[in-house]
Amino acid sequence: MPFIPHSVNDIKQMLATIDVANIEQLFDEIPVHLRVKNLPAIPESLTEMELGRLMRARAHLDSELLCFIGAGAYEHHIPAAVWSITSRGEFMTAYTPYQAEASQGTLQLLYEYQTMMASLMALDISNASMYDGATALAEAILMAVRLNRKNKSNRILLPRAVHPFYQDVVRTIVSQQGIEIIEVPYDKTTGCVSLETLDEMTKEDITALVIPQPNFFGVLEEVDALTDWAHSKHALAIAVVNPLAMALLKAPGQWGKSGADIACGEGQPLGVPLASGGPYYGFLCCKKELVRQLPGRVVGRTVDSEGKQGFVLTMQAREQHIRRAKATSNICTNQGLLVTASTIYMSLMGPKGLRQVALVSHQNAQLLQEKLATISGIEFVFQMPNFHEWVIRLPKSVDVVLRELAKLKVQAGFSLRQVYPELGECLLVCATETKTAEDIEKFVTLLTSVLSLASHSNDKTEKKSNVRTYL
Image (cartoon, rainbow, N blue to C red; front, side, top):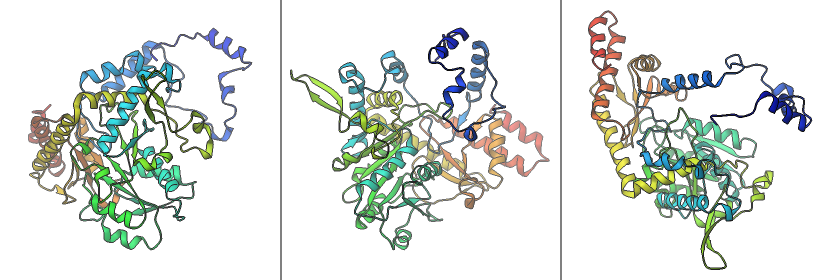
């Protein structure tokens, strides 16, 4: 909100009206020991001019950077029409459409989103979005436990090659639900889940297997075999996927003999900008017979008493969202604005356009891979097919290399040192359709120079001149 109209006197009058002494008193139900005493890095207050200047300075930090980071958030071209339409007042300020008679436009848009997302996943039903990709996976796991009640073990097989942040969120959400998360290691050569490993881990019953495609390393999993394996163990198959990749790869509903049961993931690649880390939204789709346990909102199409087409929230009453432990979900956030952008993006691109974006992204990644292979000391860690990102091992400290390239306005990738320390000095690198041959050449040249400078610090003058040619 760019303008806040309330003066100090306005605030005092509002507080007096509800018989509250100060704003802090509004939060008195929060125990004292849970409250943060101070925030030294946060100023007490800023004027409108000061705040505007600060935000412009922060935005400048993220501008004019050549980005090769993926790791779950991807830089794609977004046609100007997407956010021009999304920013219209009808969409920008729309509330959750509980009153169908006043919300037909929003409801129709959400219905169209669900239709396109279900088609992209080759499944029957989609909800109208979740909070983000990580919570969508957690909700998919909770959904699987409710669906597979015959299995009393509540054991979920979660590959270590699933996004590490998703793993953290899943454990946080399900840790108090009596659900056991079993970590499935990845093969050190392929980066994939192997059936042999799964067989060794399933002496007890399992409720569901999570299958990433591609996984966090960018590697393509053997999804057909994994899906059939899960079903042979009377477990549900949960797909966690990059939605854009599904325009090029086999969709979850087509995996194995009968398809994955649930598909989820992060919708950001579909028309949502990086935006310094969010907000984003999660998607969740499933087979028709599982819809009664699908969390979140579902929009349906019907006709009124006069035979006119209409759209309504269906399958659940509003009250289900406040039923506490009996609700299908306690994460009620509807990321409607971002879903609006994705709906417009998918409408503009169409199936052929989405496939073309995915294909060009993959082609650029292959070009970058070929160029990086010419740099002495760089090793490609997993020798398997990938989508548009992969893992490389550097001959020098990955953190030092990232820091030096950042000075040259290049975001070179995502360091795996913290989340996968066993891999050593490894970097997750990504390329999308936004990268040109010149961008790739620049990245490879600067990376070569940085690695060379680290090895030959006494030859600074010549190496610095090589770097300057790309500044």
